[in-house]
Image 1 (tube, rainbow, N blue to C red):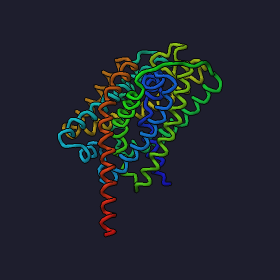
Image 2 (cartoon, one colour):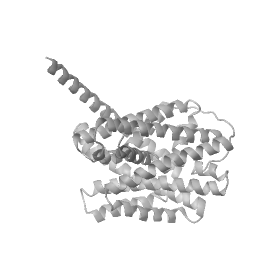
Image 3 (cartoon, rainbow, N blue to C red):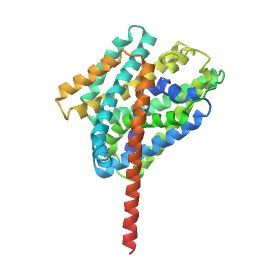
Image 4 (cartoon, one colour):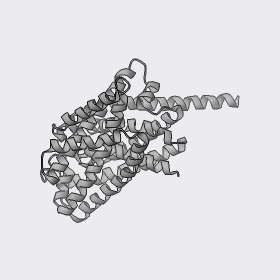
Amino acid sequence: MSKNVWLVSGAYIAALVGGGFASGQEILSFFVKYGRASFVAVAAVCVMLGVFGALILKGTSSREVYTFGEYLKGILPQPIYPAANALVTLFMMAVFAVMVSAGGETMAAVCGGKPSVWGVLLCLMCLIIMNKGFGMLTATNGLLGLFIGAGVLVACWYIVNYRLAGTFAGGGSLAVSGISYTGYNMLSAGVALAGMGRFIKSGREAVWVGVISGTVMFLMMAGVWTVLSIFYGKIPLGEIPMLTIASRQGRVFTILYAVLLSVSIYTTAAACAASAMNEICKRTTKRTATAAVICCGVIGGGFPFSGMVDFLYRAAGYAGAIILIYIALDFLKKIKKVRKREINSEK
């Protein structure tokens, strides 16, 4: 297995495991509050993330297109494509804003000060990656993604093993929530994956990326789900649930988890900011595009993190689910073409 498979897998995980995930807010909003049955949905979602991740990589690599917009242009009906492409760009900017809000809340909780000030600092840090090119972004996020995966697993293992406490109950429209979760994640992660198609040399490597990332995501989601299910309904979890729980384990553990959470936030924020900037650059200058993205982040940083996750992500998830249908249809068309060629060759 090549080094690129691990780097791309790590970068894909980093794109999926943003501040919303590592904070626990995503898992709480989309799964935990629906009860024990939501664990089945967690497993199903991870399978879908692995499968669709492999399909996007294979699709972009075979077509030799390395932006999500070009990929969508090849699989969507022409009347739908402009709206879908605009939606993806807007969502990238929205996710960037959400990450700025998450970063501000995290640093304010640990270090004090105003969340908006820390949010501005995160925006300035993202400027560095935005102007360094996609190769550096993939390498950086790939290595950090593997670090995030290991860190989340260790943190969850520690909390579950040494601070176990209680159960929970719930209910609701779990299937719809799971589909929405997959949909919005593939909108944001799909943008990152499309650019990484250039590093994948074969369909087999794309499958391996799907297997590795899907497995790691399941382990992490299962860990976070377990931790949150222990404390849900027992204590106020606040804007950053996992950090709230970490604070009960002592100051050192809180700081370590805050560092892990900050890295998770930064990898997603930088990837989304760079992707949005590159798309906007097609219509204006790089300076104007950069300013637009950064302004969006600064403004978004002033809104409550949990509310943005629950509203923006859920709404975008339904639109993302439609795009997933076309990705699956594109794959089925390719299979049909291959079988047709095989039948013709036998004749």
